[in-house]
Image (cartoon, rainbow, N blue to C red; front, side, top):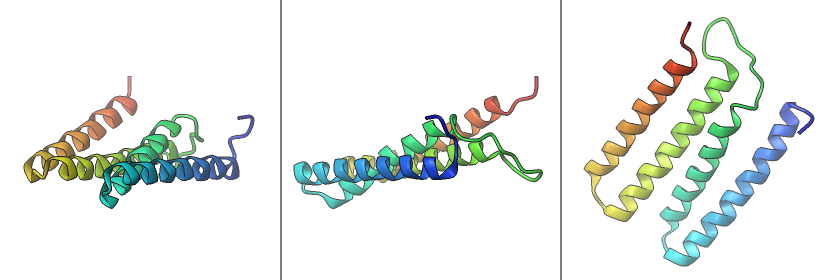
Length: 119
């Protein structure tokens, strides 16, 4: 990846999203549950978004988190929604789903605090 432009990342993200949809279709074919396909797409694309934030631009603004931090948190939240939905779909237990969401939101806070600490 020689370029870090938005169009390059847009093309890569589009390709990964299509792969996530293909995986979701495969999950639907195996399980027969459309919700499981949706949760799978959210997990895969969210994980890609969070991991790719490390390689994206480091641009910042004066009033909030950097561009990369915002992308990482968004990706983690997509993954959290997908994981929570999949856990609920597989277990049917609302409490376990809430526990998964709380753990992931806590992980976001810890990761952002470590990433943005001042030495």
